[in-house]
Length: 78
Image 1 (tube, one colour):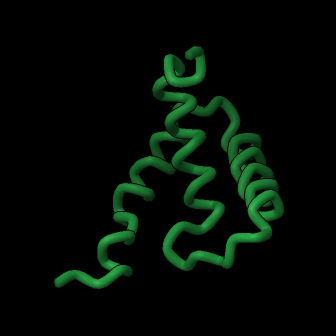
Image 2 (cartoon, helix red, strand yellow; image 1 turned 45 degrees about the vertical axis):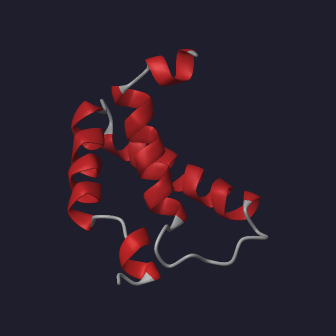
């Protein structure tokens, strides 16, 4: 039987690849880094009632959201 942690764990290699993909698509690496940090900070304070989840950190969620927004704009248009 798999543990809770193993079933909820995010593949760190895929996070690294998605981060690199986002940085390659960006015109300005500094600006995109600041946007990711601000989104993660905003998410952290919006979800104050949720206990810090060691598996899904706000920075990881912000990266995944931004990659989806950049690579799949049809998600946002709906």
